[in-house]
Image (tube, rainbow, N blue to C red; front, side, top):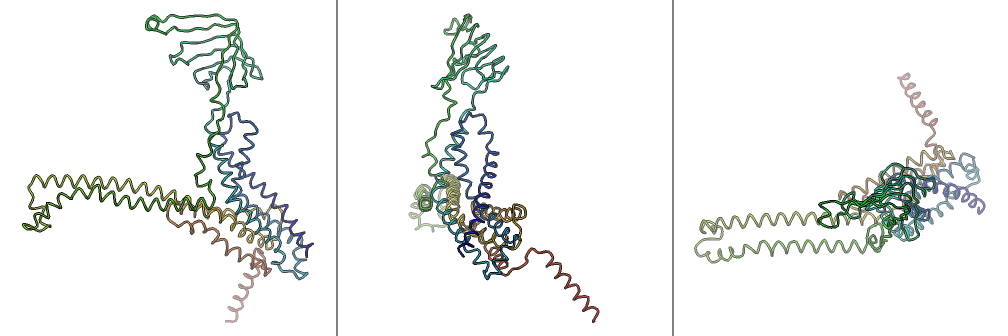
Length: 478
């Protein structure tokens, strides 16, 4: 039995790691396709780019892991059934549940690991990835001076190069406009040749050879009126440009740590409790605000009504007051009603925003659990399917796995969207996909245990043929 279990595990581990790596790679390519414009041309080092892609890959595990479990379990039992190894095991007196036992235990361990990962490691990876993505997207593109085109990427300067060497260091026919004084094109330098270098302290040093420098003298009022021109010829001139803006600055990760994707279960629960208490206090504060600041302004009229109770009942008070007071009462009531309406609308928008934030936190809270359950359910879909289909490799198993995974993914996205829109409670929307796929897994496991030819077309054709034969016999007899 140990040899059999070892053989089954070895047949499963290889496809699992292979499909997991392929899934993460495909999802990573999809991510890069979306953010390619933000990554290209920023002059990122291989170390920074490697760290960023590593954190992105970690954040993609919740999508790649269930797909890998589904595909690898289907491939494993499909290979065993296709090579008649599964038949040999059953003929030796082993049931499908016993054959699946080592992989079931393995899937439970993977699910437990996935829960730990989702609760502990995933928030850290999300924090690192989001902070690096913010830094990369907000950093300037690297310097790319093209021949014959003015480059305006450096603040205060416009540079044109006629030709440059392959390494980009030697320049020919150089023109540099200096706009640092914010007075237009009053400073310009022309040179026959030049040399461009980047220093260690993040400075660009441009050395110009054999050129002229022109400058409009606009330092005082008289010069601004007469606009004298100064021309200076040089054999060598050095221009230093600050490139600190092109360096990717590291943002404090504390700015992102309160995001719902960066919190574990205990932190999410604490945040949800705080938001619920805040919403409750806000409701009480709103009621008190309306009562104290608006309705109390009618007190003076209520007191007047009390003093006139001997002359008229309260309902006839409005008819007893003078015309001038009637107009004032109507204007006051109108202004108070408008103020109350504006305050209520503002408060409603604030409460809706708080509710949206609360729903996002609730979605993330339930995601910590649904990942583990999804891994188990998809295993109990993939393993029986492999035994029923009896096809291994990446052909039919890959197609079937993608279909079931898309069903799971679409239902999950729909449930999450309904929760965020407030149409479903979080526990219903986030557990919708597991609740739908669990009966399917139980049904497939039952069919595989009973050796049912669920996907055998010949079986269905035979049943249909028997049905028509039976109907024809009945018609002849009648």
